[in-house]
Image (tube, rainbow, N blue to C red; front, side):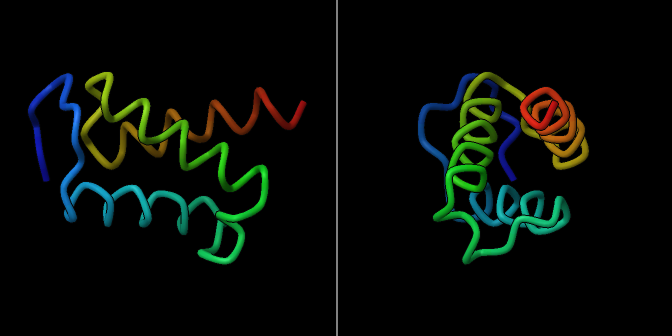
Length: 71
């Protein structure tokens, strides 16, 4: 996994980590095509590109994002 902040391109390991975060949040692969799943995936990619590169930090960010958008 990359620890390079402000990374423009994500590698396979980075994408796998984002997928793990989505799955742990209850967003299955088939749901990524839904609006919520697509938005969540885009959010995580943006967070990663902004320097949030640790799985736990991404999971916490996603949890906060989903709480804001479900309310």
